[in-house]
Figure 1: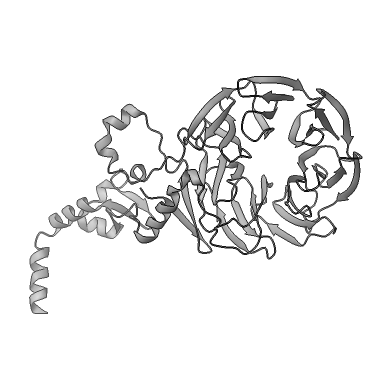
Figure 2 (figure 1 turned 60 degrees about the vertical axis):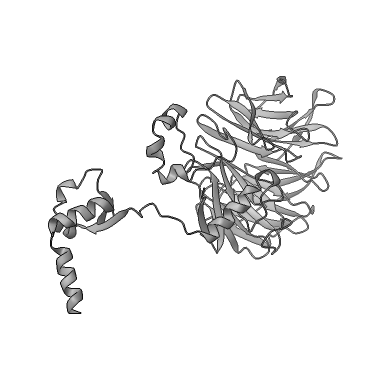
Length: 437
């Protein structure tokens, strides 16, 4: 079993699961074509990290529970929630919902309590057995956050107000009135509980939860990009560092004590930033050069140094990205995208493999020792002039010849047979030349 690997800046990224590896074939077809599949390189190299790790059409959101024992994801179609158990490396259960999910949060250390913001203006609270409660919010929501000291669920959306639902009292509290037309991102600082609101107007408002008043406004500017919105936001655990993602594809790093960013990073695609995460050095990581930032738009995931802005590595899935989640204190990254399977990537230099997937360490070590077989090892590259010599021009356009650059790939056995027919005395001529030399 071999993993597909890529390398950027001498940092290897192993594709653990994804649409390019795990070809979904029915069991009856696998049994019928077992002998043929043994010759399929992609099939023989496949690896299934977690059983049924995906959705019928696409995955929308994915998060790991605080106890690092489970993973919850939402996807379509039909809209549903799936929970995966790491200890059994399999899906624990799935639960269908009435509408698609926008975002969700864990309210407990495991999966048993969660709140889901749906695209029909509803908030759904789920427990281990069923959907416990549903309530409508006044406007369509775009993001939500949970403030544990006050038991408030904060919902921002297509309104200047951020709604507060107190789950202790079971009622809406007075909303937070912003100066923007809409709120795209809602975050709570894990160190001192400061609220961060990324707005449609391109500003970040900071609110004190104790007085419920605005204490500061950040106005990010990047060159002459014009009007831009705040599409992503994340606080670092030190309570001071803040990462801000914009709709123009830029990431700005701020110290809360300063109005100017100390680092500006361009994602290079001009697409809105969809996910931002601070990545602290993991225990046992091969590389320890300070904190990193993992930024992702719909095309590419980039990990780069927070102090210097130097690129660490990048991951470019084959499908559009919807959400990114990193397994804490490890080098395993989950990607929810516009494909049936949830893709997983392992970066050994970012951190070790989690305990439930310790076999990844052995697989990566084997890859360093054993060279990989390329997909064209059994093919011969020929140009059109050589095809004419071999008398194979009539096969152009058929599946036998695979066009590539200025020539074609032809099966090596067919090439040798055609060469023997075209020049049956080739071996005798070769032997005479060898004797003369």
